[in-house]
Length: 410
Image 1: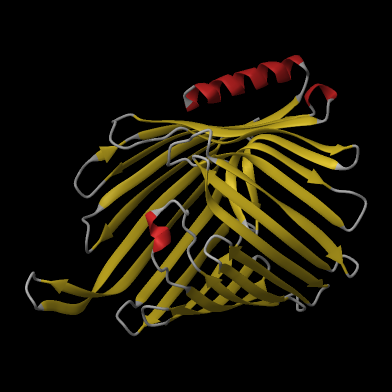
Image 2 (image 1 turned 60 degrees about the vertical axis):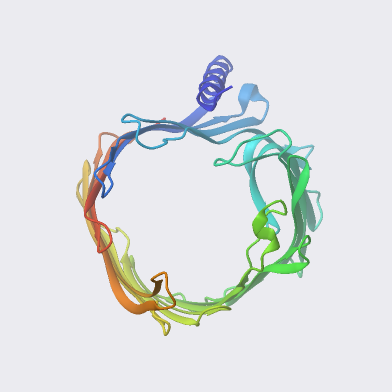
């Protein structure tokens, strides 16, 4: 059955059954049309119909159903506007005060890995300082063929110590493609909460098939002062490829970074941040990245933000960037906004001319985007959003992107 047929069938059945059984229903319907033309002048007009649905306590059984998907079609047949089923599952919590169950398409994730799965998840939560999660089913991948032999399974054991101040987790995930094992990953995570002073956390992932560490995150978040918080992290990452992929036989480069970020409260609804990141590479020079910005959330009429980034790389990959946006609530029916961004990227290129010589040099490439948007609120349930952007760079000529979206909440 095609995806759009499946979407329609599931939604129709659920709505009819829910109405018949006097189930509480809520959700959102969004109809969106996009328009853009690429620098070559080819235009596209994709249209999407999104539906998010929550049906609670079906027939007083305690079973809930959650659904989110979209239908898509390019009215000009220029690009692939795919239809997608993001999730569609039934769940029941507190079975015998011990079990939570999910059945259908849903996201599963732990420190070992994640997947969109068509299958079953089971959480065991006894009256004890630990819990167990198990899951298994078909592995869903939107951009590849879906086969009944593409499977995923795993689980997690969690425990709480030191009067629930320390949480530990041990996790596992395994994936199969056409019955062949492609991934075997193990994870370990820890989180320590020292009240109002700080939080410390860590995540570790081990790739069993390649016998190597693939991910490590260590962090500390200091938040004793209500006006400012300081977060520092260390990150290690190595790509994980499918065991059946040709890329799995090649050596992969490690990436590491040290990051520190300060958040400061300037006043009611006004915040500033500063972030420094030291990027460490194996095959190229390391880089320093500095970011800073100010954000104002809407407390009356105006909201907005401005931020900048500077990346210093001695081998010719510098980056300068600036981005700003503003929104104004004109009335309870209308909100207007706009923004702009500009990036200047320095490139270091080596161009071979087919002989023994090469042309080597650096040059700067500038790209910018300007946009305007508006939201009309017809009621608490219905609104219309629209946005148009102008994009241009040294490499591409200017082109435009626009969209209009009607939202209805029920």
